[in-house]
Amino acid sequence: MKGLLIACALMLAAFGGVAQAQDGGDGKFGCPDSKFLGSAFFNNVCWSCIFPIRVMGINLGPADGASNYGESGVGNMLPDIFGSGNSRRIPNGTAAPICLCPGRSGYPAIGITWGYWEPSHLTEVVRKPYCAPLFGTTLLKDSAKGMPGGQDVTAGQTAMKMIRWGGPNKASDATSENLGQTFYHYHWLKSPYGYVSDWIQSALCSSGSGGDMDYLWLSEIDPVWTKERLANLTHPESKLFANPVAQLACMADAVTSTVSKPSELLFWCAGSWGAIYPHMGYLGYEASAPRETSLLATRVWAQMHRRGLAKKRYGNGSVCAARFYFTLPKQGYRLQTFYPLRETKNNHWIGASPFRWGEWRNVPYTGEDYIYLSSSYSECCFTFW
Image (cartoon, rainbow, N blue to C red; front, side, top):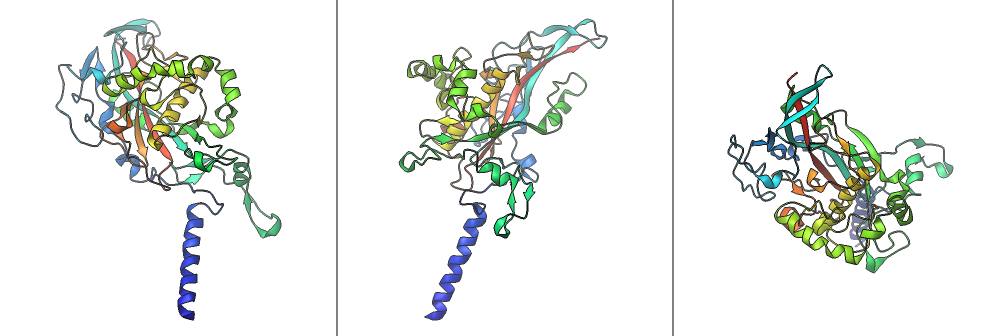
C-alpha cells in the first residue's frame, strides 16, 4: 500500500511538472511553436495561391488559382494561357492593360500592367502578451538576476504582468482580467515570402514588399488596441458603423464574401466574421476561434490602412506606386491559415464563412493562438524604356 501511494505521488508530481512547463510556470498558457523555422516554412504555405498572374488584363496560370474548397483538392489546375481565368479571384477595378509611368530613364514611358497575389505579411493573433508562435518563444527575454528569494525574473515577465492577457470569451467565468470578452494581441510582420514571389516577376517590376522579415507593429505597445475610448477618438467613424443598424447591412457582405467577393461598398463589414469597427482587440460576443481571430486579423489591416502604414497596391492609380487608402480595400487581400492547422490548398476572401474554409482549424489549449498569411493583390507597370 505504501508503495502504491508513493507511485501515485510521483505520477501527480510528474503531471504537475508537465502542466507547469506547458503554461510557462506562471499559471498561464504557454507559447506554442509553429515550426516556422523548420518544415512549416515550406509545408504550411499555399504556393499556388499567387495565381492567377494577370498580364495586360489576361489571367495566366491555374484556372482557379488554387483548389475551390480548402483542403479538398478540388479544382481544375490546367494552364489558362488564353486568359479565361477565374474572375472571382481577381479584385474589381484592376488596372488597364496599358500603363504610363516613369521609366528606367526617369521620363514617362508606356508599359504593360502586371498583377499577382503576393504573400506579403504575417499576423500573429495570440493570447499571451509578446508570445511569438512563429518562433516558439516570447519576444522579451532580458534577464534581471539577483531578485529577492534567489529567483531570476525577466524584464519580459515584469512587463507582461502589466499588460492585458487575452483569450476566448468566457462569459460564464468572467474575471477582472478577461472581463467576459474575447481579446487577443497581435503582431504584424513583413513576410519573407515576398522574396519568393519576386522571383516570378524576375526583372519585370518589383513591388518592394519582399525583404527582410521584421516585426512592424505590436499591439502590446499600442493603447488603442485595448482602450475603446482611444479607438473611437482616433477613428471617429467607429460611432457611425459600430452599431446594430449598420451591422444589418453586413448580412449582404457575408453572402457575397462567401460565394463571390467581399463588397467594397460595405467597408465597415467583415462579412460573416463581424464588424471591422472599432479597431481594437475586444469582441463582445462568443464565436469560434477561427472566426474571432480572422476578424481581429482583418481589423489589423484596417487599422494599418487608417494610419497610412498599409497602401492600396492595385488599380490604375497604384501601378506606378502604391497609394494611401484610408479604408480597408477588402478585395485587395486574401487570408490563409498558417497555424495551428495549415490551409495549403487555397486561401479565402475577408469575411468568407469559416464553414467553407476552416471552422475546424482549432486545437484546444495547444492550438488556440493563430498565424495568418495575408496575400495582397499587387499591380505594377513594366515600362518599355
